[in-house]
Length: 583
Image (cartoon, rainbow, N blue to C red; front, side, top):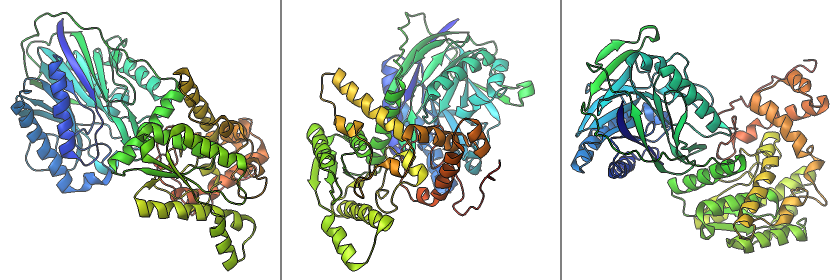
């Protein structure tokens, strides 16, 4: 057996910032080298950020990425880091090192002693859920195996790991002692458990230890949670990094020494994958005392979801260079949770709240909003919308739903005007239950640039608010959200005595049905068979289907569920299909 110290750098990259991302590689490679790592691995598409979407179709962008990887190799050597093997994801135009560029590839490069010693490309291109990689890339055809300090290390990219009988099977044929996987795997609830089980299975299939390095950070509606890990050849967990924060996971491994001679080129038989070997260094590492392997504590479900919302909000604001955020604060639970997420993401000094009471606003709602401002220390102002609504009503006759929506649109217009005047990003406060059923006002409460709780069912809004308050109290601090905002019946307060239950079923009943219809695409008959009330099923299906045009005009927000509104769920707006009532 041979010893090897590896470092997995779960870093927060920015799409399109090739120079800034390269600087991150240098900085984290220096840290890894200072900690004695023999190899440091970075996530999928590190140099370009991920996902690049249609940037991959721009030849100038592909060329810039391919050029940057060579410059990075030279830069690492010039910084005295050339003896550390670096594996980095990037956008490439070929799977070999020829100068002419072909179709884009989701690639990896091995950098050593100032040179790009080997490049390869992702084999399996996902085309489901949030992924559109068939649109952009062509698949790779080879499995790279690199010898580092006498240990053979095979390398694949993200989706390659999810394929039964795919590259992992070729790893066994190669005889590699370690399978290194570069990932850009977005967060969704319970995915950390699925990843660990997947790594168990693939390590056993490959017959090798497995090291999994993942991105961290927000990119539009996607949030990457890190959670890098290492398992041994039996699939047992050896080391694990933290969730939702940058980290360097340094792990000492005992691995089989590479065979003689080193692999250069061979076929992996039934897998159809060609194995391409390259030797960086033959001499084994002198024996040393290994360090204890880090095992970061796992977050409970509410903590995990909340951390994803905070990180997604923080990175959207900062990466898009907004200086501050603005939201309407009603005293209700949705705006209270949204404000709390914004404060945790950015700090209270960058959060501006506007209280916009109307003739129907209750005293307790105004009091609750003012109490949240006091507890969290955000900037606030009160602008009564009554006179603005009166001006509209003096010009045109409105009643019923039009009158209710008028109030919401006046508030939306006020927020967007302040945004335009003062440069804030408006964050909307609507939840997934409202978005699903169309229980919102287009160009009113849906107006804004980012929606922190867009993918959070109303019942989860309450759960997260209670969890956040409990966390504060356990730390000896005041709860950030007033209790009355949590316990009072939800209301839009657009007419006297209005409650959400006037228009919608109780949220626990509604959310369970919505999750089955939206989250898993159960049809009418399947929903009824699952125990949902038949009349309610018909009503909710109509509400959801008719609100598609509203959802298309809603701002992006962090994805935390298995199926969000946006990249995951794509239905036509113009659509006359509905399930027959008898099926």
